[in-house]
Length: 111
Image (cartoon, rainbow, N blue to C red; front, side):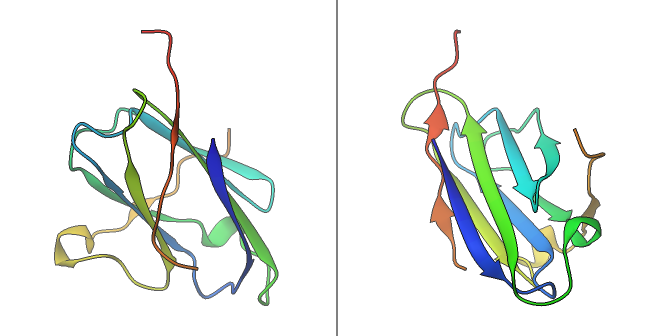
């Protein structure tokens, strides 16, 4: 399961992930077909990704977010030109390619 968003302006290039408790193990994000992997997430951890390198000029960008973890776990996602809080003010460079806050339903794992 996952969530998809369209019509995202290029100025909204920061994706903030606020993991639940226990939360998800990893999240896959696709921005206009460019894949980013966020792994080894800890409970209540906040990560900010700058995906400007995958954004196209204008307001026609598409973002797909998919999560993996135990059933029933959640992560909050914010796609914006800002972060959730001062704690998340340090932006992590986007990992190499491999509208509002929402909860992403995880895909079951074989654990």
